[in-house]
Amino acid sequence: MWAKLEHTIFRFFAKLRVLYSTNSLDNRVRRILVESLYQNPSSLAIGAFVGVTTSAVAAHDAHNHTINLIAAIVATVAILRVIVAYALPYRKRGNVRMLELMFEFGAFSYALSLGVLAAACIALNVPPVTQLMMLTAAVAYGAGISARNAGRLPIAIGQLLLAVSPACVVLISRPDITSRVLAVSMGLFVLAMISI
Picture (cartoon, rainbow, N blue to C red):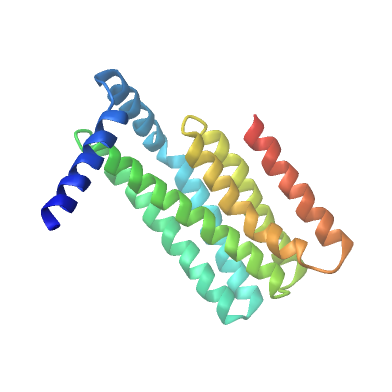
């Protein structure tokens, strides 16, 4: 019984390897694209600086433990992302898939934490200028990072969605028309960015 199951699983993965196998040209292109993600880490450092600064100000102005916690997560992810961006490229002979996964994990974590912080600032009714600051930071990050990572569409689109969607969900659930129009406008902005 176990032998038959093991054999079936082995055959399944063997078929997947054949279906999704790559040739040496695909591997070279993938390596170039992944290395391009780590080029110019100073732009990631600038984004991290903005994220850490705006998060710290939001935490200071909000006087809310939830905002403080999310702001700390944003700052931690931002700092770790910069460290990884400067350290990993020196592993040129490293596993390309591992480098790509490390970048994706950091990129998606940062975008999501920044988007959740913007949404939390809106949902918890922190001072309006703080809401504006965090929403602007999230949307600007989503737009800017989409352009930077345009060579890797799943990463670019994923980051844009993770940075903007949380605030859209909070805004659309509010009773006032202005919040709903803003949510729809942001949703259309995301669609426009994806179609470029």
